[in-house]
Picture: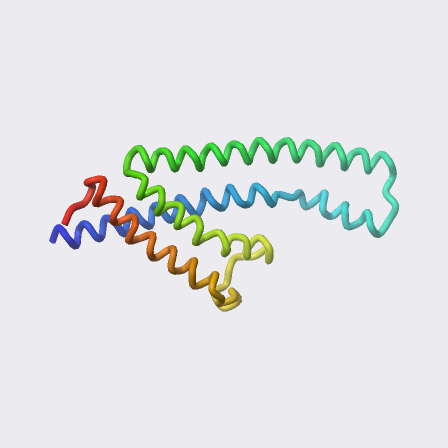
Amino acid sequence: MILILSIVLAIIGWFILMLLTTNLLGLFVRAFFVSDPVLDTIDKLEHEKEISKKMEAFLASERKEQNRANIFVNLTILILVLGFYYLLFYFLNIIAVVAAVMLMAGRLPDLLWEIKHGRKINVRELPKNWVYWTTSLLDWVSLLVFLYALIKAGYISF
């Protein structure tokens, strides 16, 4: 009975870890690909028509402000990710941090595909190459690594 309860607790913890790592990775990676749709639309119009010097100066100042804000957002998210890793290390151990990194690494190619194509990932559209199989394997192996981390930390026992 204790064995089944331990495995169920590890799976629940792994799902929570997966939820947290996926969201943190999404925030972190998407912060590098931030673009303002209004500025992008005006850039497309710039190639079609001649834009006045005032408009060019305005666009330059807006891009400068946006870059400054992006740096602040990126640093904030980086602090959140590092804090998350520290808390995992503090309350569990380094093995749990490795499991979190494995989950993030397994999610990264899917996230980059979503950013590139501009829509949620569809399993049928995703190319089934070695990257897909490796990242899928990383996700499942991270469950075993997280189970081992919980055992080493003394939260579950067999």
